[in-house]
Length: 356
Image (cartoon, rainbow, N blue to C red; front, top):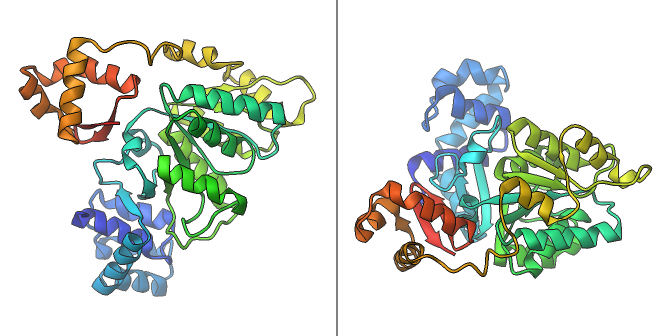
């Protein structure tokens, strides 16, 4: 199921004594999927004590530890998408601090599609919650909606997208053994059934305050753009927006009347260059997309032939499909893009596509 390189990374993430920074140094410092602990000794001991370093080294080479870890993940229905997996999103890989492993439950093919983030604060006005649900539902005609799972705007974004029949990705700041807030257990099941749950943490990792702002870099890294529907001066949604600015993503924000505390952060973002957004048209104008007519446009003959071929294959390797259709692979690029925009196929990585 996993390559040796992938198992190495999963093992690194399973060693609780190894911090993210140390784990990432092992990955990037050697530019190799096979960590050489002898070479890394000086590098790691700067981060870890010698005793902890030896413990980490022993665990990494313990085959029984690896087998127990992989068995536990499989038993809990967790799929691991590692930094070396074909499914790992390029948009996330190219950020400054990509997760070494994405622990996933649900449809991992969504990682290869177009994602748009909708986030906000826990304390969001009821009328804004309604608008958040509406615009999230409209976004699903072109994007998979990505958000967290917090009370307020994040939960509303997921609910609005799911109610519209769309797909969602929810990025958690803790392991799958926990649901936070607890009353969102039904929403978690909906997301897993009609979308994807993602976490960089082992299932047994409990929620901790520092993990939530760190998690926001993943939401920003996955998304093409992000809509901030509500944010006070110190809202975590502003951290997501900050990552988006750093990564070169488009940032959109709802405007608020002066003096509205839950909108002060949004108004500040607009002053910094975020797109003032009152409805879906403000997003469609930036991307040149027509959210109203996408579902009614018929496929061209070439699009239909390609879509039928991809659907028949299940997981289609584009060079093989091109040969089957009597075309060159480069001739399929605009057709693939069109089918992706119409929500009919998703990119899996490794030059492979699948019908939705």
